[in-house]
Length: 130
Image 1 (spheres, rainbow, N blue to C red):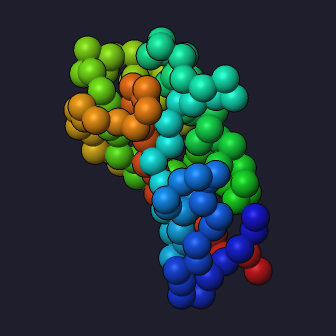
Image 2: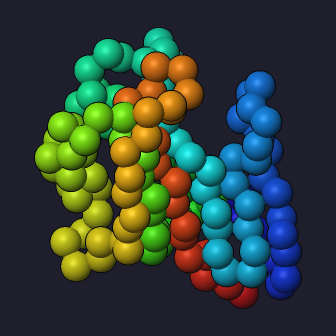
């Protein structure tokens, strides 16, 4: 999907059965809805497996818009158990270039959907296509 809205918002298809858009674009900003670490087989009970899948899901979503991790400039993290914080950071930072880490907010959340152990919401810059 290569789209540039002069104003916006532009709503992109919701996930199957979801009550929200996959992403919304306003001008040069893509607002990516919260992503989970669910793969084709559902959720793993293992935090590292969920986190690795979550980052693969983010990569896939960015690719849908011809973007990469270098275009992500802000993330919000919701994590079920702060004891997993070090594991989260290890996988998270490996996804980004060391000098291109997004701004970030994080908080513990005891109410993530389904069996999710972590959720990640991101903002990405969409350069104008000319």
